[in-house]
Structures are given as structure tokens and as C-alpha cells.
Image (cartoon, rainbow, N blue to C red; front, side, top):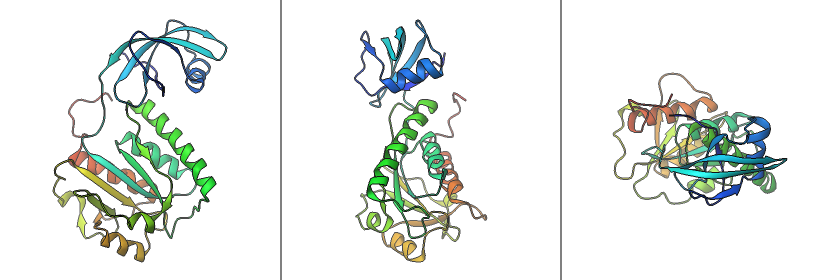
Length: 254
């Protein structure tokens, strides 16, 4: 199977239609990847499935394409995972968002914990959200996902924990002194929804851990070593996908 360049194209798509690519997509296709008339590419709009298209013409910033074929490929995890991640400093948050998308999460919830180095005012929080949404799109383009994971507006961890949990969700909090090992837990049942809570650079404060326990989070550990925040989420997601998700598949595209 040929792997054509993939682009998120947030417009209605249908076989046989001719359309101009959005400016961002057109710039990346022609200026960065140097695609030209007659080249094929893959488009997806986030609603599921993907489309093979062909470039009909390039004029300055305008790139027109024809949609040739709809492909029913889906690469979503059988698990519905939400990553509740305390804000990380610098580029660590970008890395966590990017890799979480690659590992199949369905939702990313940035929260401000007591030990978070980063503090976001409302306006800056909105800008960061827009930036992370761009990271999500780029990660989906790279890893083959056709549905964009949701990423929410940053809010305080205490406020988020105060909301009632959805019935049936398995809530896991990663902690070096966790009560149980992840590998000893039974697989989630029914719709297989999981929420994973990860602290910031200094971990979760004792009061936050207590609030999380009161909110039905189970404290779990991943081996004997203390993991950095940028490692913890990725290790936990990988382990969860291997134990209960789709990383055990015998056939992959890698």
C-alpha cells in the first residue's frame, strides 16, 4: 500500500468533488513537500475515514485537488482513554500531547496543579489551547489517525476533580508509591473507558492525591523507578495499550 502525504482538511469531502486546499495545507503540500500537479495525497477531515485525492493545479498559494476515492481506514484504539495531564514546563507539554495522540488517546485534559511550574492566564490559556490543537492535527497527520482527539481548556485540577465521574470509567493515578501495579489490574469492562491522571514536574501534592482518591482514582505504579512527568504519561499509555488496547496487534504498518 502506497503511503501518500496526509493532510487534515477541515471541510466536507466527497468522491468526485474538486476543491481548493485550505491555505495551511496548500502551503505545506507545495512549499514544504514540493508536491506538484498530478501528485496524489491523502485527506481527512476528522469525521472518520480518509480520501485519496490528486492535485489538479498549483497557482501561487492556491492548490486545487480532485477527490478520487474514499478509504474506510480507521486506526482508533478500542479503548476510550482520557489523559488528565498537569501542565508541564517548556516543550514538555507539546511532546506529551504529540505522543499521547500517537498512542491513541481520545481526550487530553490539561490541568493546573499546585506544583505546576506553568501558570496560564485566561487569554494565554486560549492561545496555548490553539497551539496544542495544532500539535494534535500534526500528530494525526503523521500517525494515520482520521479522528482528532479532543483537548480541553486548561483548568485547575481541584475544579476538575470536583466534577462527578462518568459511570463505569476506570480512573487511574500514576504514583511512585501506588497501591497496586498496573499489570495486576483486570481489563476494563463494557465500553472500556479509562482516565489517567499524571502530575507535573514535582508530582501531585498530598492534598491533590487525597482529592483524587476521593474522586475514585486508583493509585497505581509502573515499576520501581520514579519517572519524569514527560516519561510517566507515555509509559502509562503504552502499558495500557499493550495490556488492554491495540499494541498487541500482530500486524502493523511500522
